[in-house]
Each structure stands twice: as structure tokens, then as C-alpha cells.
Amino acid sequence: MTAVLVSLACVALVAIAAMTVTALVARRRGRVVVVDVAWGAALTLAAVAAAVVGAALAEGTPWRAWVLAAAVGVWGLRLSWHIHRRDTGREDPRYELLLGGPLGDVGLGVAVRKVFAVQGAAVCLVALPVTIGAVVDVEWTWLVAAGAVVWLVGVVFESVGDAQLAAYRRRPRAERSPVLDTGLWRYTRHPNYFGDACVWWGIWLAGGLASGWLVGLATVVAPAAMTYFLVFATGARLLEETMMKRPAYRDYAQRTSMFLPWPPRRSTTPPTLGA
Image (cartoon, one colour):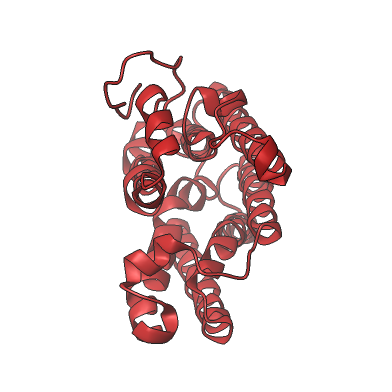
């Protein structure tokens, strides 16, 4: 129990430090969207911190702790680099909607309360399977392997979806369709968010459930919360409040699953979460 508490405390300190630095960068640049770059990096640092705690205290299964750190690192650093590369120098409309206006108008205090504090808490919550998994023993090794497979599916969906969107945006407007509806985007309106969810369900399998039923139940809130964020909070739903203003996107939404990959429908029935 002591090792778990130490790991939780270290991850919390990492989250506080990461979001404090990010808030200061946001104030200097006048844009809250920089937190998107910090998200993957902060979770990577949290996973490494947990693995270091496990090694320092000689607790847990060492190889699993570093497998988890590597899995989070590959996902998180790729995501941070991808978001950094596509930076437009402007605020994301999602954050202006969330804050009730531009950062310069609402002030840093509002941004800290509504974005940075929430993101810091989210880092601690989402990292739970890694934080605890790094300092407890593996009970079912086969679940670590199963988690790795689910993680890989997620990484493929997210990276391929991002690459397809980037290629679409590089084409001149006159030569591309109004909405990207090919490749993975034919089957889900948000393959990157779906991939994100798979990554964290895979990490939960490997870091949480593989440690036994008790740890699995104690940490399942992490992938569930991540999925909620991706679909309903700062992800798909919030993004689509802006996207639905475009007629072409509304037509795309009528035939394409919002989240889970599913063959395109022909009817005009509004899509649901599952299909």
C-alpha cells in the first residue's frame, strides 16, 4: 500500500508541475490550446515517474512497469508532436466555447479553473492503471499481451487517421471533397478519438486488470473517463458543435458513425455512439 501511495503522490506532482508550466506558456502565447500538446507529454512523464518509483522501491513487476511506460510514451509523444506540428497559431474554437471567450478576455484564472486544473486531475485519473500497475505484481500475464494488442489497434487507428486527415488538408480546396469521408473516416467521424480510447483500454488491460480483479475494478474508471472525455467532454461532441454548422458535415454525420467504426448507413437517421 505504501508503494501505491508514493506512486500516486509522484504522479500528482508531475501533473501539477506539467499543468503549471503549460498555464504559464498559455498566458504568454494567449492561447489555451497549448494544453493539447502538453496532454500526451504529461501522461508520458507520469508513466515514467511511476516506473521509477516501482524500481526505486523494488515493488511490482519491473518489466511490466517499463512496458507500460513505453506504451504511454509512444502514444503520448507521437500525439504531442502531431498536435505541435499542426499548430495554426490560433485558439481552438472548442476552448473559446468552453471558457466563454478568448483567454485575453476571460483571464488566466478562468482558464486554470476550467482547463488546466481539470486536465491535471484528468492526468492523475487516466494514469491510474499505470500508476498502480507499476508497483504491483502481474497476476495474469496473458492480459498484458491482450492489452498490448488493443493498444496497438488504437495506435494504428489514431496515427493512420491523423495521417489521412493531414493528407486531406494538404490538398488544394478546389481538388478535395468538402468533408474527408474516405479511409478510416468513412467508418467513423473520429478515428483518432476512437484510437485514443483503444489505447487506454489496452493500457488498463495490461496495467490494471492484469494485476487482478481488485486492481482492475479500482482502475477501470481511467479508460471509462478517457472515453467520456473523448466523446462527450472536450472531444467529439464539443468539436461537432462547430462542425455541424457546415451543411456538408451534417450530411456526412447522417451516414457515418460518430465514434465506433461501422459501415456507412444509407438512411438519414442521425447516428448514435455505437453506429
